[in-house]
Image (cartoon, rainbow, N blue to C red; front, side):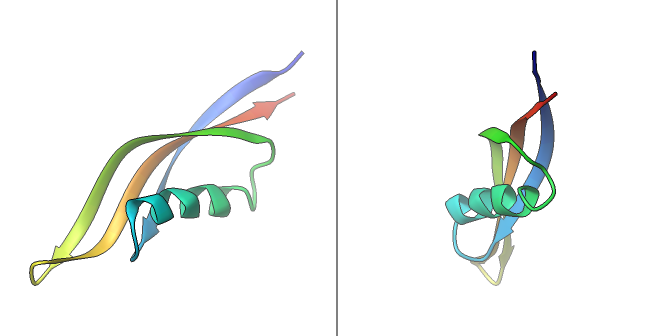
Length: 66
């Protein structure tokens, strides 16, 4: 029998929200095993001088435990 645990993480990118979400999964997978899904729950950005400088993707990652 197994269970699923969910954690929240924010990915950051200077390219896009998609890249920010991918960054979250890539970084989490360095220490979290068995990631089975990602849910992007919000997208935000930092703006400087009228341009977006950083994309942030708040994600919930699901992974199998046990």
